Image: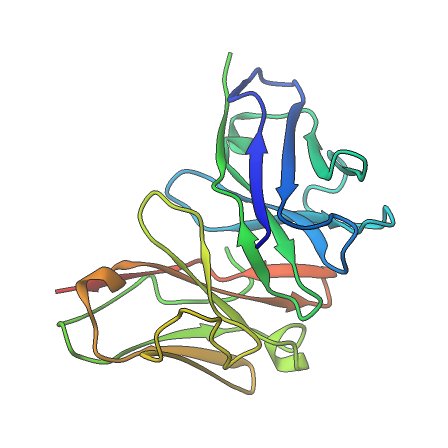
Amino acid sequence: QVQLQESGPGLVKPSGTLSLTCAVSGGSISSSNWWSWVRQPPGMGLEWIGEIYHSGSTNYNPSLKSRVTISIDKSKNQFSLKLSSVTAADTAVYYCASLWGGGWFDPWGQGTLVTVSS
Amino acid sequence: QSVLTQPPSVSGAPGQRVTISCTGSSSNIGAGYDVNWYQQLPGTAPKLLIYVNINRPSGVPDRFSGSKSGTSASLAITGLQTEDEADYYCQSYDSSLSGSVFGGGTKLTVL
């Protein structure tokens, strides 16, 4: 079955850019699913960041849209997240997940903690 | 403040039944969009528990069930077990945001 694995720096400086990659295994990133990012600040709830289709089409959370870019690399079967101008409020566990056409997320990656600090 | 509203916590004794509510609005659940539920055990990623309001993925016990009516949805857990202690999140689509929205999460304590 499909498995997802996030990777990237665990520490980013304020005003810098957070960059994460999600590797997809056990299935093709060119399938009919969308590929998503969700984050969870420490001790808080889940927040949808955005998603990308293999065609390159994207949808972003309006509250983050000006700072977010999600891209896809079909040759490597992976997709990526960039979040610019980060502050301490962007400190969170970042999850990648597969979004099915019916609107549910499954499976999820294990998550990676990104801390914004100088 | 989350778009979907859940109670912060619920509790029950082993063997009992609990329900977790998820209240939305006319731009999400009330507009007919489906509701999905996730279980997040401590220190782990969320796991799909219920999809499209009432469906259980393979491997999810039938002690877990979902329902939806109007602008709300509910997750019911019967025959509570200690391993059910977790955070539970509802999720739907919101037409105003043109994207997915989550509830704030409900912490289930099994007494």
